[in-house]
Length: 367
Image (cartoon, rainbow, N blue to C red; front, side, top):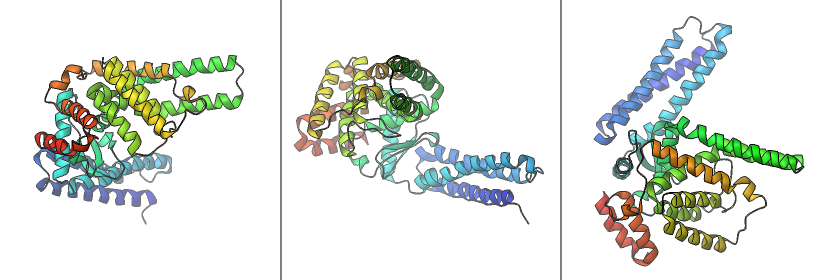
């Protein structure tokens, strides 16, 4: 009778082989722009299948001394296989003309901004607004986004997540250093001021959130602002209202919208979009007034502007090092997607009642 490990690897190998075969079948149906991606995903699945076969042939597989090591190998391969089935295979089997539109737009954005890697592909299968799977080079958008312009700047945010993943060391090391430097100083000051243990624990909780996930969201926002300029700032206001959350309350994965708006304005100032930054700040203030919300106690402790400014400087420097094309005021006269988004947001703010017709004309030009 086979051991549990043997059963697990046999099942995993079969799944990997079947996924590779299904991805192979997609070669006859996906557009040429997606074929290289399909082949890459098929190769991953095939390698997973071959690796499980190799492990099954290892004479030490059932040796108690190595059992936990093999089980860790199983879990690593199983995570990859599950991700391939749940995301790339799902997308490629259902890839339709709207997905192709978004993928082509994304490729143009990558070309225009100097994105240094192969462009990701884009799917309009999302039920969770815009999101990305960086290690799979997949960006998801809601089903109607291929027919809209105002939300398109959020693509730059998702592209920022892929960039942060691919260039993790370049971005993460200086950003985490700033986070540690800042919270170390805050803690020293707090201890000197005789803060109670509960307040010190709260401070350390904020440090943990920044290190775990908040830096990624702020980082992607700042990359998007660096690349897309004011259109991302305007889009952020729309996103903050459409998703219906509280403006001053963050969660484990995402910092508070109000703090994100502050960071975006800082980057706009950094790239010399000062008038646009002031206009967006004013609009954000209107939103805060409409919401009736006020900043909670110790909001500034969780989102200190000094740290946001340091983070902005880090991202700006890293983007420069990578040769990414910084948005500039003169870009608004060009024929790039970024320029079209700038003009679209200007048109919408001036004539929202007739924007649909304008939007349709621009989309025809873009696609």
